[in-house]
Length: 225
Image 1 (cartoon, rainbow, N blue to C red):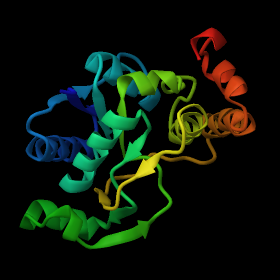
Image 2: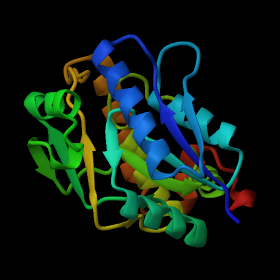
Image 3: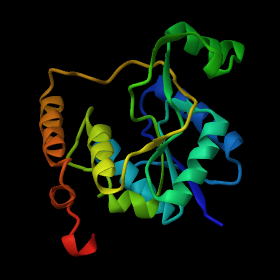
Image 4: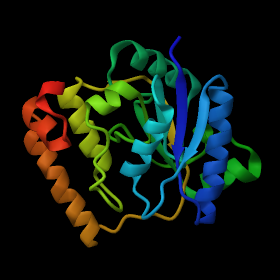
């Protein structure tokens, strides 16, 4: 039987995000009670790439659910994604639609006990590729893991999606919804970190048509292919 680890990368320090992390962690335990549940951080500057790598290391094997601390999936699509990832070694996403709650919608979740998936959304989209990933530990490392040269906000999700597509095959989506709880945004598109991350991502786009080039970029020896 395949083991399942649900990991929430998170660092405390902002009250709204701490509240979200506590809520999401508790809900995930209700959705997948048989799984091992982790909340993961790493020392030093917070890096989503580094903390996700650490989460997969701690999982050790089996299927890993990497869920952002402000994002909640639905039970059915999440279980479908877990079963799919265990069987095919691809990256699975338990949603086709992303919903970002408004401040009022997020408040209704906590003050009125409203299910986040039914709370008012400020935005819906079918384009996002992050939020919740489901993948085996072996497949994660076969795609190179996450690139820890991405520091600060932006593009690490896009880079891993591109590497996984090139080295594993097209990611699989399962019909459903993920809902993002509102908090103060961290993005600064004028920062040096953002521009550096964007430039690094461009190297992934240039390598996406060549598995050999992609393996070289993510540090996988050709003999390990």
